Length: 178
Image (cartoon, rainbow, N blue to C red; front, side):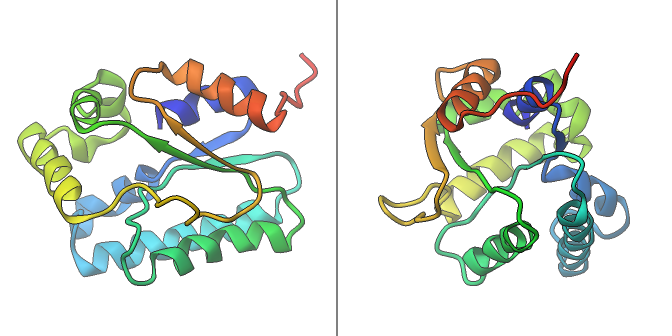
């Protein structure tokens, strides 16, 4: 999310981080309920349709991809396909950081401000450990074959450094004229 915020600042694109829909649904159905997950996917789908139909600028989406889980690849490629079919360029950026750094970031004020479900630190810290134990969060070599792909180990990088690296790699510049 923090890298997305920096990209939003640099490029003027709108950030739709993965917790926007999670936070919308969680008070009613819980973070991990089947109903909650279904609603999160449906809401994202509606937003992605609207974003893909929009010709006024770019969008940034963040997602925790559980590589190797059934349906994950199809889901994310289906979301991205909406933009491709609408003629929008798609840039794939995979970020990785070691567990201790992700645990540190899990407690930052910015994260807790924008992700209320993370404010229960006991639950949130346990969730980080469970996700680490149960899912593969980074791709294997050659697993992501999409054009415009970049993988960055951002363990020791600031969000602004990562955003600037992404912009430089893909030649992205702000469409703003200010």
